[in-house]
Length: 122
Image (tube, rainbow, N blue to C red; front, side, top):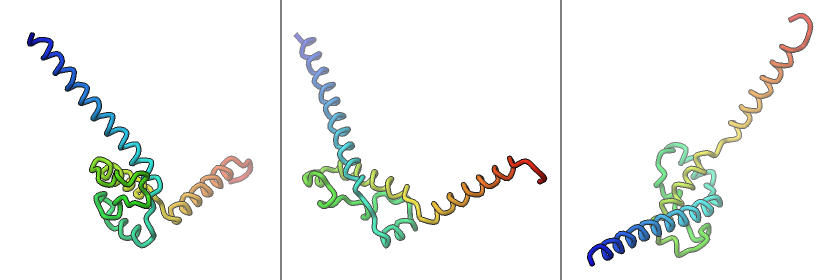
């Protein structure tokens, strides 16, 4: 009689663990989609760039304006995931100088290749 109860208890614990993983995955997916709309203003971005390692900063708190479901603001799993995704998105932002520098590098490389492959005296 103990074996069926033991097997049933084991199956229930496995199902509970699987359900919890599915819950976390779906919450992470929702947080990632909501964080795509996140954008820091110039003033906060300058402040953030001074200390890029603090993803728990108040800059990345989700607000009612950017969240698809406001009841998720009380869910700690959602808030942590949202902060992480918003931080990663902001950290990957580049300045205009970054793109200008890459543009000049590509131009210089193109001119160098064109000069090296032109026949004639070098």
